[in-house]
Length: 267
Image (cartoon, rainbow, N blue to C red; front, top):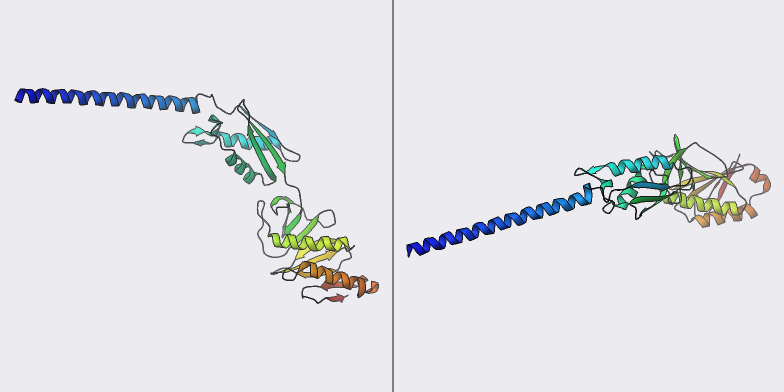
């Protein structure tokens, strides 16, 4: 009986050794297969980005944007450059990177063609106006994004808003839309009636007050807390029916901030 038991133990041990050897060989085969697959995907160059074509309108610099794109593609994660596999390249990440680096770019479309070339189509932001926050002035677009620095201006070609509050504005920031929307509505309404506005001002420490500076030099005081169109309507009625031509020539300011009230002062 003892001999039979020893025989069974030896036989069982051989089976276990064979199973361990087979499992080890399978594991090695899997590791080699995964390594080969990894090499094929990321190191063989089979799926590497072969080029970058960029289409941009002036004055955007396509060469500068391409240089930044190439640098992004060369950036490595876990030792592998992004350019190594176009199939795994995340277009949204590249778009976000370019949008942050170039605020003047409004939209970015990225396509991957069959030859593993990236095609980038960019559109630029168009100026809605100029926002000045002492001492700097910036262009902003219809999404209220501050996208480029410029010089101060005053005139009728483009709307100028001068903010005298203590604001640390910089390229890439968003302007508070309530100020832009309401002041532009008022400006448009007045200009449709022949009262030209050369610039808009937000006084220091203002919470709601803004001033429209007319071409003739007088100021129109308005408030965000009172319906803008009602303020405009009140002035237009007074302009046509109450304020004489002689008074218009001597106006210093017109105050529309109180509901259903209009006050004006002459020099």
